[in-house]
Length: 221
Image (tube, rainbow, N blue to C red; front, side):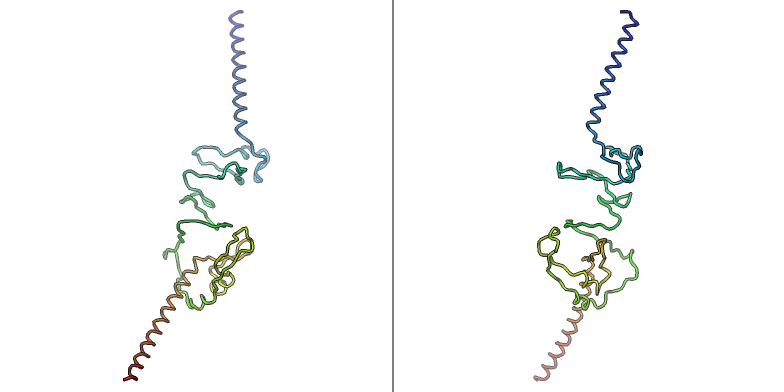
């Protein structure tokens, strides 16, 4: 075999080896990636990169369309964010979960504390709640059970939204399903002013009793 033929044979064998290697690597990559069954509804067919998976890395990534995470029961976890903040409705989250807008939960919410923004610098047209005791007497504290037992089968305690709406409509909202909701935290100001009214009435009664006692003492002398 001449030197020229040997070089040609060596190049040919090298090309075969490289082709086989690339083929094996490509098959491994394809086996590790399962493509989505369909493009998101917002993507046009053939839109380059539209159905590509989210990449692992520290760079900011944007993606059009919805993100649906389904573990198929393989894992008890869905989405885990190890570090950083998550923003819903805003692009600059300042907290671990920063939501701009209303949220809804069909089950219980657990937290060590709930803080409501209440700084006087953010408020105007401030007025004391009048006739708080009268309004409070119009609201009944009730025991009840949910008709939909999926929510909870146990006996509950609370108020009726329609009763509250008659005297304190500011804390009632109607949700997207047409049901009325109560902001229970905002019942506290009504309770505070009702207690103050009771305290005022109590002081007046004490003065009246004191005057009556003095009159009785004078009559007994």
